[in-house]
Image (cartoon, rainbow, N blue to C red; front, side, top):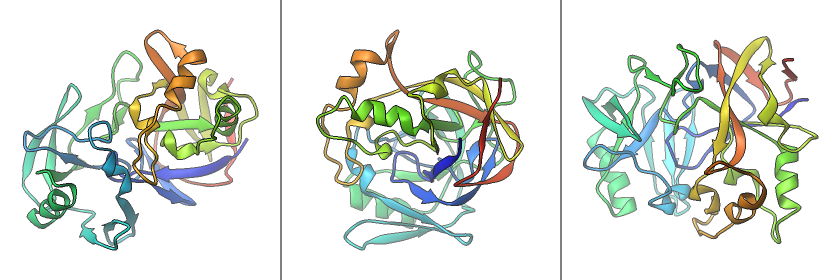
Length: 262
């Protein structure tokens, strides 16, 4: 079994970046959800409330990040912001974040027609994952809950076989996509290894309305949640994909072998 795709989402709930080679850190893929838009109260913003966030396209280089729109309008964002600290809220977690700049805040506020700020999670902020499903040292950036989301190609094929119109994998915003053969086999993996780095299983990913948003147009529909709810409902959660936590830092690439433990 091999990795077929790697995706990084530098700013929470904005568009992703498809990469071939990348570094995994304990918080997840490097730069993944290390930035986040917050409202004037410091609370996180996502596509759940504003589907237009899907239309922002980041591009990461070793020197910085550019976020652009289809219109051609764009803004440069430093990888190491030097702004003041502020307290932010993501779900029930309160975190210390770092402001990026007034210029960046104004650009996002103007583009979205709503007042907001862009913040960054510095290395000094340690946001721990939920203890009910994690090891004590597991940490995460501004992702909803856990560091790395894995999805198998067979799982998407199974879903698409039940839909009138097939959907792309980007509806589920996974970090690692694998060339699986059995639908949802990733749910049962206790752990897997990439280039010697171990990833231990945390929990299934309960899906929200973001999956119903077309990531290219920001149009919102009812699928895939309507169909997934018929056969992927566990308790109150409709599940697709599995969360894992890396146990160190290492470079990985598309095409690397994914060795399942056990």
